[in-house]
Length: 108
Image (tube, rainbow, N blue to C red; front, side):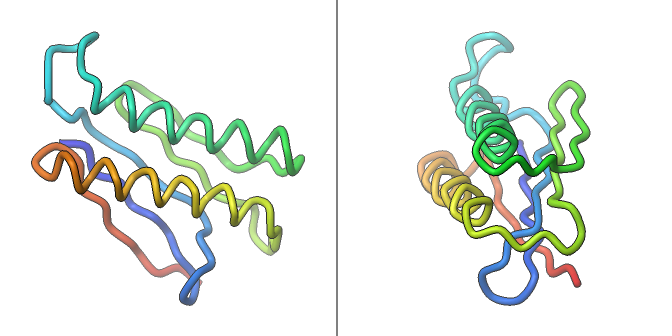
């Protein structure tokens, strides 16, 4: 199962995320659920860097991607991109609830 943790400050301020694990929907290389989560998370990080100039702190490994906005970063466009990620992940979780689980974690 892929577990995704969204780190949120207050009600609507997404500070970052961590995605870990494999969905196990199909064999490696054919798993469309893993591919969808990977595409969304990686595109979100790349879009934040490209369109806002903000460089999130990123850690990546096999089946693992974490990205956090820099402390004190208050950027509307980054929030739009992170909320787009949230919407896409919610849609995947709804369709594949046994393979993707989304959690929120408060941060200060």
